[in-house]
Length: 183
Image 1 (cartoon, one colour):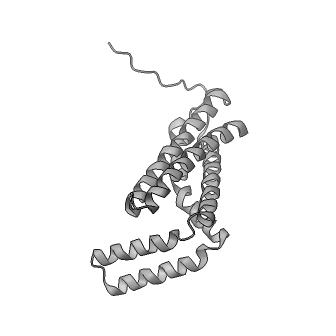
Image 2 (cartoon, helix red, strand yellow):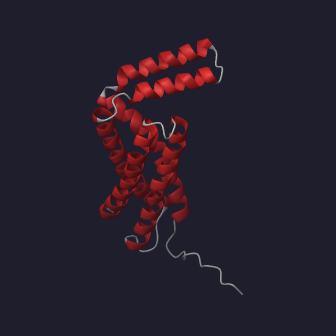
């Protein structure tokens, strides 16, 4: 299992880190705005986590002899997800602390400007300003930053792991679905 988990987890993490490395400079120089960055970021996560599905399928076919229960499939998927998340968190920590320590300031300014544009009340804007200030106070702590970054990506991987386990489970004696033969 270790070989499958590492192979697919590292590949998934590499896809995610590569996509993030391409998008971050585009966001910071203004080519992409933060709203588009969020959509593209989560799309990249889903794309990278497709390798969870293929990793579970590979494990089922190559290690488990063509059968796998939901629990084992979920375990393999979750381990691949954790490897991917670890790579993403490490890459973000390196990026944030070495290359874009002002990211949160830029993101906060964007969020507050957008609230003003959409006509949010001054009370809502002040509440968001206070939340951003609270976040900024702790965001320079590597452990807090890592936890927030992990919680940004982990739910996506968890959902993909659950769906993959549900789709790919196959009991002993249950044959693989056959492709429809055109008549």
